[in-house]
Amino acid sequence: MLVAISAYIFTILSIILVLFQFGLTIGLPWGKASMGGKYPGKYPPKMRVVSLINILVLSIISVIVLIKADITFPQLKSFAKIAIYFIVGFSVLTTILNLITQSKIERKIWLPMAVVLLVTSIIVAFEIGV
Image (tube, rainbow, N blue to C red):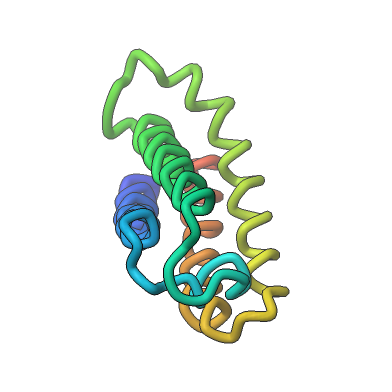
């Protein structure tokens, strides 16, 4: 049960990140809260493409977490058993990057989310609470 709850929490937070990235992609002036604040205001065109790629990556990651938690696509479980460890590593990296960012707004908003994503990905990966 804890694994499923963690997978749902991970997915909900990922959806929030996808919506944020979508906002950056369509030109909302949220650049100060991303990439260390390097692009305050609207993202330039190349960074909007990066945001689109982020949307794709976050979506794939969320589906893998749901697969590993036995919520969807059971035929892909063997793939998810391996891929989940890359997601844990990715979550470690994003937590570290949000911890060391120069941007105070990123630390305030995204660091707590990164920590929760890390914890929930670990719970799903190692099936804690099963």
